[in-house]
Amino acid sequence: MIANHSGAAAISIHGLSFAYDSQEVLTDVNLEIHPLDSICIVGPNGGGKSTLIKLIIGLLTPDKGSVCVFGEKPEGARLRIGYVPQYARYDPLFPISVFEVVCMGRLGGSFTGKYRRQDKRQALEALSVVGLSGIADRPFTSISGGQRQRALIARALASGGDILILDEPTANIDHESEMHFFDLLTRLNQSMTILMVTHEVGFASSFFKRIACVNKQVVIHPTSELTGDLIRDMYGGDLRMIRHDHYCSTEGHQHD
Amino acid sequence: MTEFLAALADPNLPFFRYAMLTGIFASIPFGIIGTFVVVRRISYIAGAIAHCVLGGIGLGLYLEKAVGITWFGPMQGAVLVALLAAVILTLVNRHAEQREDSVIGALWAVGMACGLLFIAKTPGYVDPMSYLFGNILLVSKSDFLFVLALDILVLGLVTIFYNKLLAVCFDEEFAQLRGVSSGWIYLLLLCLAALTIVLLVRVVGIVMVIALLTLPAAVAGNFSRNIRQMMVLAVLFCAGFVVTGLGLSYSLDLPSGPVIIVIAAAVYLLALLGGRLKKGTL
Image (spheres, helix red, strand yellow):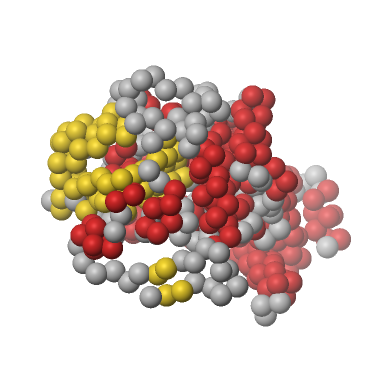
């Protein structure tokens, strides 16, 4: 799983606009993401974060403007993208093993979708990268929230892509899992471009290089410039701030 | 039960053996497709296809008896309309801006209405009850051959496209991202479901199709760690329900379809209660 960067911007968006029916969600968005960049996408609900992700992975088509992934249209570059959706939308009764979920990252190689020995080997390798080799045969729905999230990252890694896109991956996992999760992202960022949607701006500031606020338009800031006023501007109003104290786990979280 | 076994061995009752064999071999597509229907949560779509089948049966009867097209009977009509319904429902699911449940409801009712209109205009007396409630004892050798052909088709296509079917059922968006033509795979699933439903109509009738398609898989889901296990168990449960139902219906002189369904529902209930007792939530 060594990244193969061709010199082109990892993701390049120019003059992009998109509307659901007549409701405009994104207007004249311009964004340039370089290989090995790490960007955190924040913004109010309904601001267009998930729509932007779907446009980048080619599940939606822009009304105006263009999206390029490594110089290609998203549809052509899909196999270079590893995508981690929110796991909350999975059916809790679906009988499927962790290994079967991860193997899905290898789909697309053949007409029938049969996995070759090499595909299974890559799925096992991805499981070992996220530290889940020991639970490959366990039902996906029986493992913890943090483990599920790592299994979904393994599925994205098994794809062998150069970009990892995550949609609110920390929404349902505990504090300790979250720490392991960010450690894992730091390792992966050495060979992959990372793009993550989150509401937890505090964590984001310590890991990501840049922060993109999506609220119909996209404004990018280096995370080092992040201040309370800037966050208020990005969300268009006051927020309830929850300060996470990482090193006092016995005390729990402090709420301001 | 001895009477039932004697009937099976009786050379003068070949229809009974056909019924038994048809039930057992039909359990293969019922269990496999039923599993996909349950995990993809599309039993209401299966219900709409089942009710549309009456339209096909009526069309077949009308063309055969009123128009004189002898090669197009109720079975051909049922297959044609079931496949057509599968295509329409796939198109609605993918492209229509209408509410999907409204279209499903409309197809459900219109299919039945057309069927009854065709039957009304067909010369001679046609009893719609046998189609609505089915009768496995009326299956013929050609029905049995249809079951065998469907077994081969379902086993073959599900084996070939298993990974894609699984991916589309579990996470369609991700499957699409990996280059899987999710629309075609969904259509394949609905077409296989449509053919299975045509067969089910013969066994338990239109009204009870959803029950026999979903109950064995739902019971199996309580004991399965993955889809393959669920399919195998669903096939075994389904065969068990059909054989037991036939035996009981013969011994108690009751219609076979409803007995099969009641047994399946009772086992489903027991499996649910057993699961809750095991988890300590009862």
